Every structure is written in C-alpha cells, then in structure tokens.
Length: 154
Image (cartoon, rainbow, N blue to C red):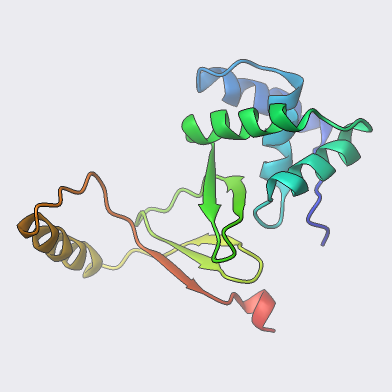
C-alpha cells in the first residue's frame, strides 16, 4: 500500500466538522492534510504529507503552510507527532487507546492501541510515587511500547 493516500471527496464534510468542533479554521490545506492523515496506512513525515498533498490536489502546497497545519492539528489533539529513533517527526491521526497506552512499530511507525491491563495502573502509580520522591511531578503518564509489527516482521 502506498504511503501517499488520497482523500475521498466524501470525507470533506467530516473533516470540516472535525476542524470546526476543534476550534480550527476550515481551510483547504487543513482539510486535505487531515484527510490524508485519516487514510494513511502509517504515520507520515512532513515530506510525505507534501508529496501526498501534491498527488491529491495536483498542486504542490506551501511547505510552511503544511508545517503550520500539522502543528495546529497536533495542538488540537486531532493528530499525534512522534519522533522516531531516526529523529524524524511523523504525524498520524490521534489514536485513542482505552488504556492510554500504545505500541509503535520501529520500521513502519504504525501506532496501535494497547489493550487494557488491570495491573498497569498500579505499576504506573508506583513509578509516579518514585518520581515524586525525586522532586518530579508528572502531569500524565502513558506507556509506549516499541518493536516490530506483524506486517513488517512477516
């Protein structure tokens, strides 16, 4: 599957509503980027978004505009920015995990929600207490496991 998805016209009204409900301006760039991220099989780099945008619209976007749109989508919680081991930012639609924890493939950077585990909150609480003893106050905790997904391993 191509890392450069094409948004479908039917998603335009959905992206408009999502942008509005998040307090963001509805622009062609914001809609297109949100749709591209929604249909991407894996997280996209800025360059991937620019290439996919060009493919979807037939015209290359302003690169700075794409940076700004991605920043606004991250700030609004509509997409996640992850920095890989290669120190490259990758963007994907926000993954809502009931457990709050995720798995990220180190090869394709796909992000999957981890299942809930009744023991994990206890472990995270113990870690939080240990950090507070060191003068560190955590605002939130989340676990990200890294490895290779079944698609990449296969």
